[in-house]
Length: 67
Image 1 (cartoon, rainbow, N blue to C red):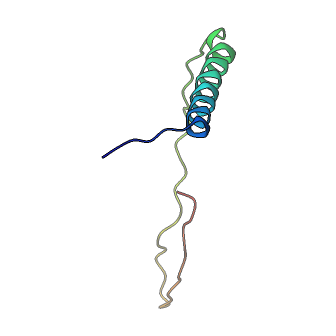
Image 2: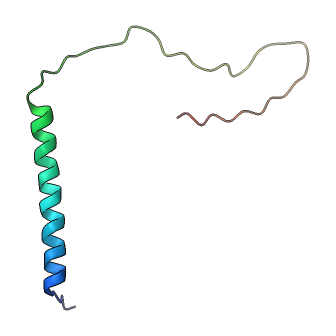
């Protein structure tokens, strides 16, 4: 397998690599100076109601899309 590079491919690869490196550097400088604060939630997570005991026979179809 031969790899063929021309000027346009080389420029495209260089610009892509430089862009990714710059984005990582910018993200590191923006988030590097702030102090982290550890927090925890004491409230329990509320779960949806899956079943209710009743005397009537009923069926409900639901879709939970908020995973």
